[in-house]
Length: 497
Image 1: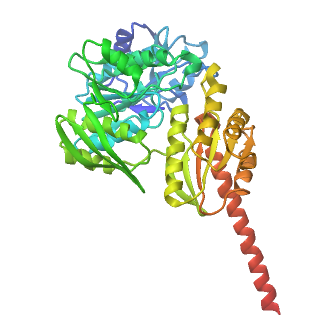
Image 2: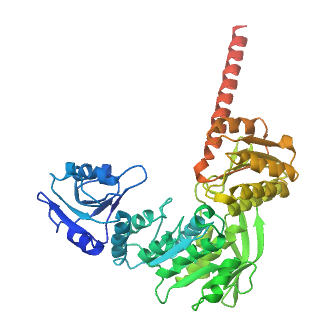
Image 3: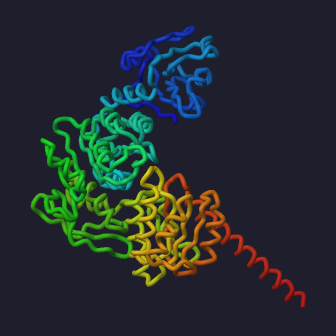
């Protein structure tokens, strides 16, 4: 990753002061040289770079300091300088924790931005919420957002370094897998507005209980200034328990809870959108449209609408932003594939998002008078709860009358067994336990589905279920090619006759 610093440059001496690190000067290195680029990959180092030598599970960035200096890095930040680099001309700042130092420099850089900062976390929906907020803010402001999955203790600082002087609103996503990570990130970003979309069961493997997940998500408020605003989902009981004990009350978004400061009512599902009426500040905004399927996206849009009002935007501007929202790649992307309606939702999965995706599948199939079919893959990071959650997933698929079920991954047999026990016929369930065998899963689907069916494809990111879709495309293209060849040969034979 390489990021140009457009708000402020840093010298090695400044970096040492900010991080409390030990400044070391090699050869003709100059501690007052201004550095204008951050790199975390030594291969991307160029003149005037600061190289952060991050030690990962498989690669130690400190081993590549010489390469970074040869590429043009004037300053390196790491835990040690290897002997092969000491003959070069550069400055090093030696720290105990390079990732911590990355955050400290980002926190300093953040001071030079005049933008309003919005931070989003939650077990499900944080990326879609971020994108909706960005779509809304972009109507009235020059907006900047977290790109891709840069929502970690490394990704968030790199996102902040990309902020420019033109940016007026910054929308940041914060993910986590352990206690303390959200606190670290929110203290770097110091958001003006923070949002918690919900509390799910992702990361049970590391955090143990939903209560711990809630406490980890609530850390986001620790970076708020005194006049900062926290917005939470009032339909989540665990968040409402926190609401009761907080001295400064958050704003609430809800569908069911009448206490909601932003409340959606009269929700209607249309063929390609959801429409609802919004109640806030003792008034009603009717017919709010979002180009997405599923009630879970109502909550995401409520957060975006709330942020718009907090930024001083008018209702019609916010409406326009929500209408302009485009879904995120591999998140509920709906398209036609050789006559089959595919709901491509491969980006990630948790029990909550799986259930929501099945709801969308069934809704679309019902509207089209089509068969509801689903490829459901492993949900990761559930720890001791994994078997139970996959069993419940199979139950839910049966309860919602999924008609053809394809189970993919190491927990495929658990999903399948639960689905069959709860009403799906055994002959309508296919199992592929080896998640590496995308071609085998694709063959099962191709041999079963027919034009007109609706197929949901969803699994955790680690399963990469999109490989199955790509395999289906290739197999279909190959078959079409063969048919064209046969027809051409038959025509040639006729011409000869």
